[in-house]
Image (cartoon, rainbow, N blue to C red; front, top):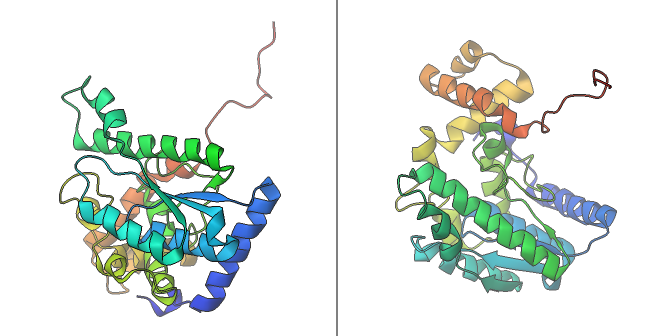
Length: 263
């Protein structure tokens, strides 16, 4: 981890909790719904929400598919129990398979996107039932890399971890005593058997954090970043992905009204 990315975890956690309360109040809400995947990002999001709002104001949802690793739901349950939040499990298999059956040639990537969007459908439905807002669980590293599904895990009312690099998420999670099994596991979206984030991306989160920091916050080019001791191949891969996926973070494009034709 870069020394430049070190945080005062207690101060930063307090700042995020204040942000959650403020943005909820602005929207006229006091409750939230969080999808608990069994991974570190959703666990930290849920922990921060529970501390900010009170556990009674947090609804956690565990949303497995039939091929999901059972450990994911087990770890999610452990974290929900630790926090004392209301937790419900709903399997998305029937939702996903109704579309998958129609397109048997579907790639694993397409299927993974359907899973992510079905999960978000459930979360938004439950947010209406619970009278709360859906909390996003993406961190800055994932957002900059476009490592999320549009209208899936990329859809939420707010992103309380959106400014944190993956290494910072880990540090704050340790500080808040997130369940040890979650802290120790390899990051995975659990979209298919054996899937891990870093294998899919082709580089580690630690490498990505460094490249993204130097590029987006310091303004170094790829040659200058490589001089920091990183592989030029890795630097190029991270920057290429960031640039290719940048459209995911932009507002939906539409023509402006100034050039509008009239009858």
